[in-house]
Each structure stands twice: as structure tokens, then as C-alpha cells.
Length: 149
Image 1 (tube, helix red, strand yellow):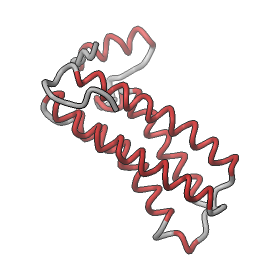
Image 2 (cartoon, helix red, strand yellow):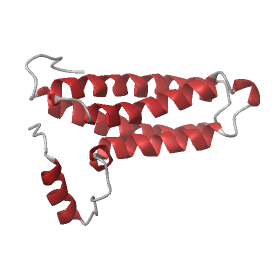
Image 3 (tube, helix red, strand yellow):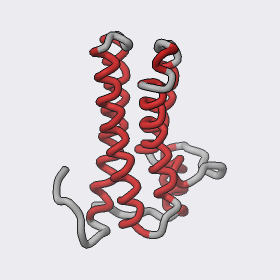
């Protein structure tokens, strides 16, 4: 459990599953990043219709948290070793938690409809689940870390 793949191994796996990865950065090959990126796009689209008075409040907060979740996975991929990468995944997980609350608050303030919140929550759960699985896979590569989340 928790094998860290080399770029060549990513390419082999991508070939098996039919992906052309020649022009992809390492982070683009990670399902966790892909799900967080999808979440970020969904949050940007959803917040586009929120009240103008929330532009520097909840809109900004939701967008920054969604962006941070995907960006920290991308940045962590460029770091040296699994311990450092795990630290960036930890930040990503924190951003996902922050986003979860921001969306819940927007729903409770009726800025976000319950139906739209359910849609975003589903995308959020998938992103969070994949990010957590990636984080857990790196625990085996490091000597310290939490045993559960």
C-alpha cells in the first residue's frame, strides 16, 4: 500500500487505461487532483450567480478554498519525497474542509439552493475521498503521522 510511482510508471498505467500523458504534468495524472480541479470549476460556476455583495465575502472564500485544494496537490507533486508531499495534501484537506463549511453556510443563508448544494457536496465528497486516499497512501512512506483522520 502507498507505492510512490515514477513518471515512467504513470505513463505505463496511462497507456493501459488509454490516456495520453505526454503533455501532462505529474499532478494532472492524479485522480485526487482531477477531482479537486472539477470541484474548483464547479465552485467558480456556482458562485458566479451569488449576490454581488458577497463578491469579497463568501464568493472569494469559496473560490480560494476550492483553488487551494487543487493547487496544493499540484505544488506538493513538485516537492521532494512523500513526507513533504503529504504536508501539502494535509493543507489541501484543510481547504476542502473550509470549503465544505462555506458551502453549508451559503446554503443556510439561502444564497445556494439546497439542490445546487447537494450537487456541489457530491463533487466535494469525491474530491475529499480521493485526496484522503492519496494522503493515506503516503503515510506508509513516512515514519511519523496520524494513524487516522
